[in-house]
Each structure stands twice: as C-alpha cells, then as structure tokens.
Image (cartoon, rainbow, N blue to C red; front, side, top):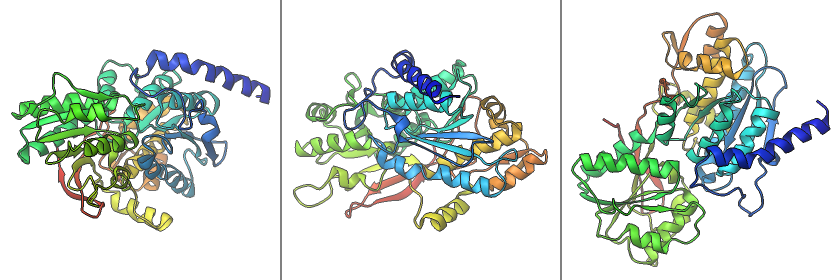
Length: 440
C-alpha cells in the first residue's frame, strides 16, 4: 500500500472513533483527552518489534493514565513471552510480531488504538485491555474485525452478560476472573472480620459499578447492611476534587467503607476523607484497582507522620498456577526483580494467543478464536512450558495449558475462576499479602 493510502486509511479510522465509542462505549468514562489535555493519539505511542511475517499480535495496555502504576507492571510480560516463543521457533514456522499500544486508561484512546491494531497493523489477536471501560470500547471494534481480544485484567461482570448474549461471537476471553468472584471473596472476608454495616464508593464505570452490584448482593445475603444502598456514591472518573463524595461515603457511621477505585483518582478521594477526619475508626476495604507498591505513597502521610492507608485491607486476583515458579524465575533472570500485579495474567493471555494460533495452524483471529478454549481447557497433555506446548501442537497433539496465574480454564463466556490474595498496608507503607480467599 502506498504511504498516502495508509495515511488516508488511518485518518478515516481516527475520524470514526467518536462514532464507535459513542455507540458502544461506557457512557460514564473519561473523555478523549490524554493526560496533558490534548487529543489522544495512541498511534504515536506504539512500538512494533520482530518480523512482518507470521503471527502478528498487539498489546493494548495502560502505561499512562489512571491505571499506569499497575499497567507498567503488566506490560513487560508480552514481549517476554514473544521473545520466548521466537527463541524456540515461533508460531507456524515463523517469528511472532508484536505491536504495543498505550491505551492511556482512556476508552477513546483505547478505541483508537484498537482500530489501528485491527485495521492498519492487521493483528490477529490483542492482549488487553486492563480497564474494563477500555476493553468495552476495544472489544466492540475487535469483534467485527475478527480480532481475538484476551484481557489480563478487565474484571467487570458486564463482559459475562454480553458474552452470554453472543455479543462477542467468541472473540473475547480473559485470564483474570470476573468481579462477581472477587466481590464474593471480599464480602466473605468482611463478614469474617465482623463488619455489619458497610458503605460503598466506586468509580463510575463498568468496573466500579459492576463490583458494587455484586458486593452488595453478596454482603446482604450474608446478613450485612449496606448503609448507603439507596444513595450509592459513584464518582466521575474525570473528577479532581472529592470532598462531597468522601462526606457521603462515610456518612451513617459505617464499620467499613468499600472503595473500588483507580490509583490516581482514588488517592485523591482517600486524602479528602482523611483531611475531613472521616476515616478515623473506619476500616478501609480496597480492591485490585489500587494494589500497587506506589499507592500508599500516592495517598500520603497524615499529620502524625504515619501513612494514611496503614491498616487498610483489600483483595486482588492472585496467582497459583503450575507455571508460576518458572515465570517468576524467568522474569527475575531477565529483569532483575519480581513481577508485579497482573504480570502472570498478562503472560498467560499472550501464551493463549500463540498456542491457539498454532493449534489452528493459521495466523488469524478466526483461527485463534476457534482454538483458544481447546488449548486452555481441552482434553490434552498438561503443559506449563509454552515452547513444549507449541511443539506438541505442531506434531498434531492436543494440550491443556496450565498457566502462571492459574489453570486458565476458559469457559464458554471467556471467563476463568481464580484465587484471591488478601493484602494490607503496613506501618512502613509497604503492601504485603497476608492470606488468600477463595470465593464459595
């Protein structure tokens, strides 16, 4: 294609983004501006590695925006898996090509990035996104373009509901369990700790509202009371001040406040609650959206010099897969540190794309979609090593991939079931895992 044609194609695709997001996105999500207030242009924030032949995949993850602190921990898994696969012969006899795009934790930027990946880069599969609101926008573009989207972290129950209706036509899966399970686990944990009256505050998007709904249902079934059930506090993802929301969330003398937040805006909310003296004596319950080593520092310290978040507890999808030890070792050997949150889920999402393409013996989204459940939860040889799995598939054998995050048994709705780590913030501001909880 001539350069002028490619430029014209991208211009048309970009022009269409507003219409696409308006039709299929979450209406309670950020606008289409990047952090500096300029129009989002994810094409300028993308990188391409490896050859132009063979399987081509993309990543659509947040290295900037409200979820950047976690996204930056995830993104390294994708090239690490691609490098591993290419070192052992690639997929279908050719190296895998990777195109990486920063979705900026913004549905419009994510939609633009997904459009670029699907229509210009012609990828067969994409690892992404993390924010559920971004994945909602992206999957509506991936599906008609027959690109397989595998999210390592979008946990909204909305995806299950839409998959049951057939909206995604098989072009959606995720390696992190839906929040129906995490909300159940956290509600059980709150009940075990003796909390009877809880208020909720959530970011007003698919993730926050979906989690809130599942938590309220479960906690009430366990005999608890949601103090602000009739007036739920849902904050605007674009908000910069939170005094009113903090006052409403802590009203009514709750034993605890469930706060389903993103790190950047969530830190501002928790600071506002502290500055108004609202959080004293109230247990803070948090979720995976803020489980980052830097989050306690973002929230900051009080006048006494102690971290405001000291004693807060939360849950996050854990990792207990048979491939976890090998993954942790590889990460440390290559990067000199331990992997962060959702890195195992991101590794597994990328692995499933490559294994499914090899199983299909074709480098297309249709091929991947037709085989992804088979390699994830099929009646074949259990494998934890991706290269071993590729070799068996090349020889015509069937496999059952056992991942780093878990067994990644993808069901008909694209969902998996997982275990959850229970974490807390210590006096030193460090986050530490203090237990595990399995939803029942």
